[in-house]
Image (cartoon, rainbow over all chains, first blue to last red; front, side, top):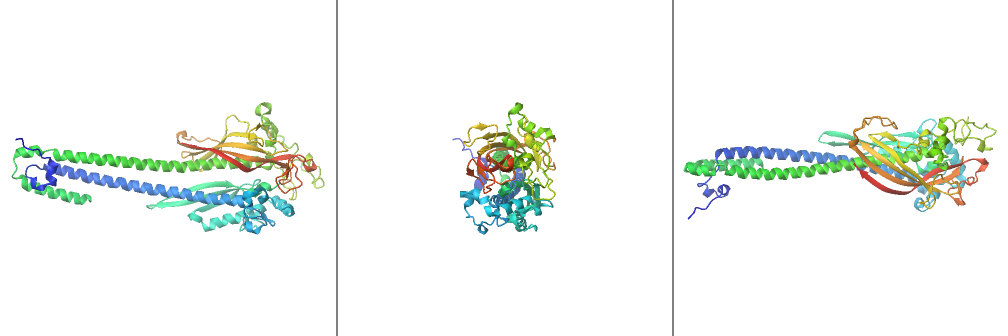
Length: 210
Length: 301
């Protein structure tokens, strides 16, 4: 009767049968070294991947945060209109209903007839001495704390989602176009990277100027 | 199980083997040589394959995430391009372009109207005297700012606007931050959104469709100033592009006025403005106002 073959690894699992077959010494030493190297390599591979994913996720989230703030600024440009000799984005300060932007955008931006001349005069006072002097953008207050400029300053001060408005400057005087530079820093494992995005916009109201 | 624990177990197995092997014959020893190594090698090969698969998946995920981020930058660039092009045509000096047939004289209609920079398209460069301001303004350029003293500002047309329809190869403008844009096409349509027009009418609104391509290229020096031509040695294989098509409402109105009457329909509260019958013999101008449709988003890398 032929002797039944016993695989070598069975000796490891069933020690009581180790007396028939076993590892060579060099096998164990070599296998141990390889396993240690393999384990260390795997650990570093996963660590590198984990850091890469964390960093990439951080950057992606920062980019999305910046775009969220951009959308707020876009919305600001859409909702800003002219009420009582000064621009405002607060619709409750006007006689126009809050939903008129959707139902009647034309009436939403058009200054009421009695205010039209004031509006035209304000249009004539563009940014002769800096962006704050533009009466359409500054809402009638050259301090830069009201109108579109005031709203931008507010976003700059409050830093929603930790997004910085690095600067907002006059990009084109005739169209009252503003260039806004936004940034957000991401730090992962003591490495910091700053994302910078720029956004051009002018309030829709500016189109109503002669 | 931690790697150290594994090594410890292997050491125990080795010691057990060392004690027991003293009773083994040399033939038994030869029979076992290489078998454990083969098993370990197979095991490691499996682990290596699995690791490579995981690494490959992770790398693909990271690449996809980077591409998404760059596509957003390319989309931003396309949006800048649309904003800047619309604003260029809305500049006070350029508001006659849309009412000028661009196809005339072998598609040089706008360039001729611009007069190669020597003749203002408004026909006159004379600023009316105080006594004449408010009278017969049709004789004078369509100056916009009438409230300042002295009244000495006339906005002339810009070559950027005049060249929008003239060049066979669209110009690429860099806006900094490794982003650029170029206008791929521009087409006017009548009120039905279908009939193509060469010039906007003065008694009805029309629609302007713009197709803009935005590009992000990480190899372009981000310190480039705004609106320079492409003089950099950009690696075009790193281009990430995004194309947007938008349609805008074009509304005629009179020089010096806000939006008013167009073809019997009110588009604003300025009752002095009737786009087809302007007061003081002033000219009709065309303003691009709101976005009516956005379509054909396309991203590619």
